[in-house]
Image (tube, rainbow, N blue to C red):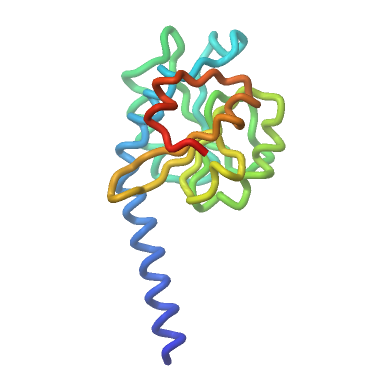
Length: 169
């Protein structure tokens, strides 16, 4: 009986944690939009649409679509794409990998090798595993970890101002 109670408690904690994250997605687009101001992509990424992709299903898609309605990156219009699987990943400026798809980070990084894509994640430890920016909840507030090595590898220039606000990995 104790094992069942522990499993039920663990399941409840996971559910409420994921539910809290879903409710907090209203803040992520603000962070993401501001990242575009403090990260410079190579010249070949500075024309056409600015593509933000999401791997799998996530409530963040709706929030990003709302942001895209009235914001842009200079003259670039935001386009929000959803990739159902890693095999669908194509050129994009940012790829958001929700916690439910975290196990696919290494595969996604392999597909994106040689591209200038900022990979965004939201599970503890993901910046250390290669994502450029990882959202973390610290003391009840959303913060972000920055993996400078990963962003440099993808030819993304992160301003010192943004780095100053990040938890550096």
